[in-house]
Length: 335
Ligand code: P6P
Image (cartoon, rainbow, N blue to C red; front, top):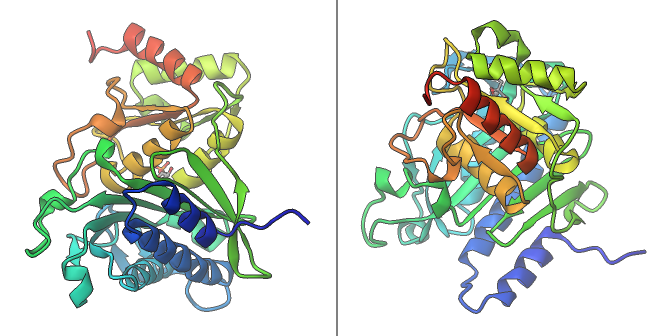
């Protein structure tokens, strides 16, 4: 039997490799691992424990109807991130504004977390994959003071770590601290995330493209021409309404995920801080690319608001480069 490397062991071993590591980031990552196991337990029995359905018809900052599991996942992530005392504040899709964690230790902690606690929650009631997305930044405010909005509205290039959990046919946690991407699959028989995908690299190209083709007539010309091109090349369209799931496929098998501007979302639908930036850090660390439909690198975008939206084109480098040619050729905006 090959040696099992648990997430905790991997985090601690990685920490020892870097003399400047203090263990604070490791403890935050382990808190997230615990939260992922708890959320996974509820996701797997959502149909049985009256946790399905809308939470009284409330909506979150993305305008999405809030499902009970959204709220549960948000609460558990906040609770678990309080354990180590290494996180001083959280911004979440489920929260109007950022929050400070109340413990005495948290007040002087040096990291903040941004998160989408349950991405793709419209899939919950129909038993389709959902995910958690997180990013970790160093706080900018003085540790003896209050946290501020500036602690959160940081560029993606300033991310210290990012990751996601995919609650699918199995549950996998994928993260990076800027030194490569590693995946850990949950073994329910021992309750541990075990290293299953070491040093993940995205294929330079692939046979999948992922976009909500239902908006075809609402996309700009360059998007429609690219979609036509994908069809001409007999690429396979895969789009399940969960960014984590769609990008996870592309990370493994190659491809491109696109959420361009539409009439309903002229700035794009996805949130820059806690969806686009963390996923872009992971994909870039695995050798991929992530840009906006105006050819800007996602990670270099100025973040001005916590719930700021962005367009995104992310995935295999060769396919992103090909998409750029369509944008340069057909985009009225870039002329
Ligand atoms: P649409 C889920 O709400 C999400 O933020 C992403 O995970 C997903 O890819 C996208 O929005 C789905 O949006 O407009 O295609 O339903």
